[in-house]
Image 1 (spheres, each protein chain N blue to C red):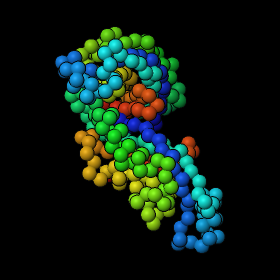
Image 2: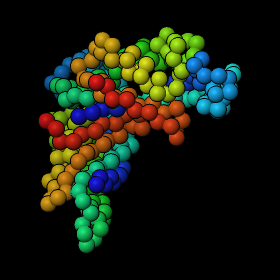
Image 3: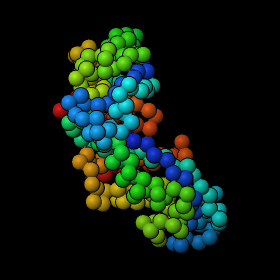
Image 4: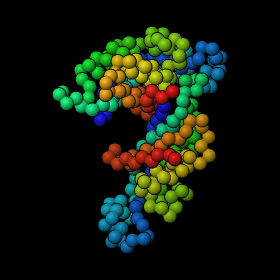
Length: 137
Length: 134
């Protein structure tokens, strides 16, 4: 069975590779490379796979899941400038893809346990753009 | 990893097949068979799959947007699907047919490094059609 929990955070970022020229960054990232940053209301959907526990009837304790999402994602990223305030985005360009991969890494170590696994991270940068990441290389 | 981008276009259509009688068409398609047609605000989700490149992206947004704009939006938006769209000639322009036509149009000579994974079209918020790209 799949269980999905949603969380939101708002953050600013700049998409630019510091080792590239300004022209190349602008060609690759467009307005996303504007040097002082801009922001989004990110929406995160975290999907967990498992069977309901025969005693509790739950795949995963939702209160615990909420705490994990708060500790790993919302508290460190909400109302922050990702490039400056959230590791590893000082050196990893915080594209939607890379933010989703970072969220996956943070959650995978907290969620995986007997019979329960993190299945998918869906991150909406806007309502018209989202990525899905399932831990693949 | 997959990335999905959402686009919108508005178009009119009429559902009617020459294979059936006037009464049968009316019964099968209901209001969608009304003779002068009607329209929808379609929402098109295009999903691509791949691994992030050196820019940290699996697809350049502008490249995907330009492709969808040129091949789909510029041709389908504010058009009559029965009359104006070559791919739908001789086909009843249901959203199923539309999904097939759009997938085919996008997949032909697909120019981007990321693979076309699927298209998903909603005719209204209540009717959604999804086609995986082979």
